[in-house]
Length: 419
Image (cartoon, rainbow, N blue to C red; front, top):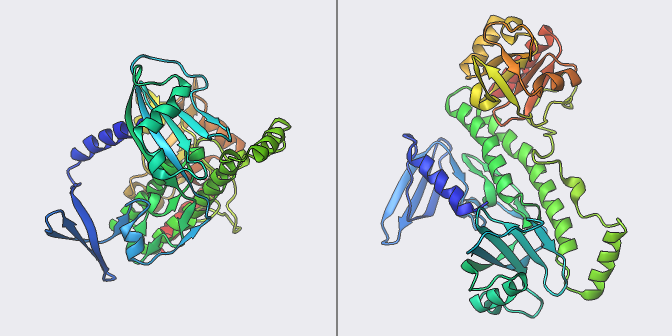
């Protein structure tokens, strides 16, 4: 994708939100957590100062995070870092690249080439030993390296070139008092698995619904402690995988590269793929999950809920577009009938979507949703469950086989919010 295009869409959306205020041109210079609120001080280019008071502050301010450094959070750094020249190119004529995304494990110059949105492509070239950053970060150097791929000033525009240094590190604390960290402020990873921004999105998806419940008074502040507990294992696994892959790719010694190639061709080198669990990522193993009568979550608790199309009230489409987002209680039987009245009131007070799912062709009760793509009912059958409670970040909180188990599950969820 082309990240600036995504950012433009996000900014356009932000401008339409009545409860969001965007202030640009300021640098955060002060942060005070009183225990009951936080005051942030920012300064503009002319030296003007701005003070903002808030219940909570979330530092999403990047790799050189002011928020992280100001509150004194240390980082675990794996010490795996290399400099790469990034070249964003706009092609004058359409061209098909096969494969679209490729890593050239060339010891003479490790190189990455990936799609970057319609009409765009990105090449990244690793800095070699003895080569200076200044020498690498020149337009002339970029064109010389791009020429190998038949990319020249005659058939392309070099939209941007810059040298960046990737790191492999994570913050040792993601919450201190009323200050939290997310995105690159909380973790940095090599780019080889494409998980940096994905990890940041997962951070915010995990944190936002919990923070919302706390702000609404529907949950206690300790709920926010589940945010780092749930996210740090994901992030560490993603970083470890990217580092393992990077150690295979970032080889500039010819003899070492020859040995690596022979091992790869023989199928003997671990490139780190074992740490990948598809697009959804690995399941949660700790945090706000239903453990039943034990202490370890029973599958599918913690797993990411797949999405399929449903038909509801005459409309067919993806579940979250037709039924809605947020907390979801699914059932192959009607959950509203299985729940006690007080529990149903509790869930609907949180905005929970209570959905009775039926198979295509089955007689549907009023308000039921049809599992058009056969995604949800087979999942529940495989889990030997009649009910699934799904968190707003799409992780399954827990499963229940009977109305009695559903009652216990909802009670446990409520106590997990309020403890």
